[in-house]
Amino acid sequence: MKLKFLERSRDIDMVNGPLLGKVFLFALPLMITNMLQVLYNAADMVVAGLSGVDGAIGSIGTTTAMINLILNIFMGFSVGTNIVVARNIGKNDPKAVEDSVHSSLIIGLISGVICAFLGFFICRPVLKLLGDKGNILELAVLYTRIYFVGVPFIALSNFLIAIFRAKGDTTTPLVVLTLTGLLNVGLNLFFVLVMDMSVDGVAYATVTANVASTVLLGVALMRDKGLCRLKLNRLKLEKRAVTEIIRDGIPAGVQGALFSLSNMLIQSTIIGINNRVSPGGFEVIDGNAAAGNLEGFAYVATNSVYQASVSFTSQNFGAGKYKRIGSVMKSCYLVTGIVAVTVAAVLLVFHKPLLGLYSLEALSEETAMLRMKIMLIPYFTLAFMEVGSGVLRGLGKSSLSTIISLIGSCVFRLIWIFTVVKVVDELWIVYLSYPISWTLTAITHFIFSETIRRRYLKKQQMTESRCAEAA
Image 1 (tube, helix red, strand yellow):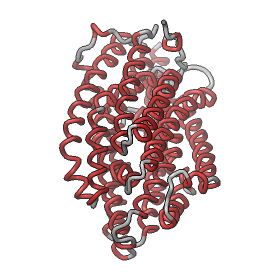
Image 2 (spheres, rainbow, N blue to C red):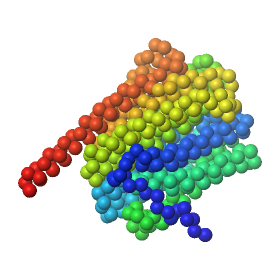
Image 3 (cartoon, rainbow, N blue to C red):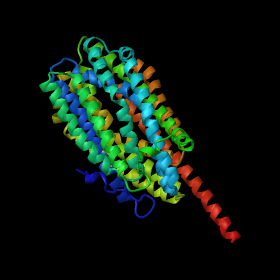
Image 4 (tube, rainbow, N blue to C red):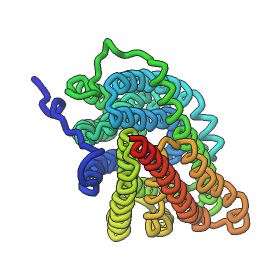
């Protein structure tokens, strides 16, 4: 039986015509896709809580920063894939597109295998270093080790999705990840409620769903009719494509990894506060994990516009349309601002029923609500920070984007933890570091991206002027 949805072309023309509607059409399926992924991740915690095992929810929550630290190694390269493939499409260079598509998938597989081995063996010492102990530690290690077995498939899935985004198709990943997400939830319930498992069952469900995602996305790309079609006999590393992907991907990977390190430090600080206010309990850890899980909906919603800013800027940069990139920026800032305010408002208004899904104790709910208020009210500043970063990457300034993000956010948070939090050792002070860092970084990203865009535009206009005079 043929899967017709895998054969339809859904590519958006990013270099011609009106932009605002196209940015929205690009971001909306991606937003829904990412929100479904967060929903499935939230289901992991909810179903783990149904197992009745003490600390199941908190144990999964404590693994997030460490897992992200490892995953960002290949996630950065997938950002490089998005940039390079989109830029080559904008240049209308079929050979370069083909090389970058096939080289990126090999890079994805290699990096995924490396991450799997790394994560599997270092998870216990890292989680102990973060402050996990006792039952929380054992559950977290069990979940993490099973999760990392599936990391090669998670890597390939992310690289395939990056290729679809680069060519303007965010609908195919939506369809595929919706199907496999439902599979994930179904397997969660089966393993936990029927097979009487806990975090291990949730992890097995995640691995299975990611294998299915990789297969379906791969089939869809093999049936693609455009420049990005996957041909298994063309899978090889092309030097130029690999160099470009690594050049644009490493800064994103380094940024993600160092952000995860700063978040791990913050997670360790939160665990320390939990041990102080609730010795032997998990209330603060559980509340922080539940709120962070809900905030994931806001993050992926705004991150979808970040992905749009990367793809639209990259294609127009490849096509030499620097003036149009200014319109890309305006459209992306407008869309992401609306999205951030809307999603944050929904989460805050419906916080009681949403937090009720996690079966939290009173102190856990209080912790979750504190985090949500401090993080979500100014969430539009993170949205602006993300778009500015995406535009800089699309302009070929991935390293600059990383440097700004690391100084404005990562370094700032580390200084905050070692200075302000040492003086006022309160949870709200820890959380406050996030919105302040988002604001500082967003302003800096905008200034640099607009300056660089204008510089390219001025250079182009001077070249055209000389050509006109010579003619």
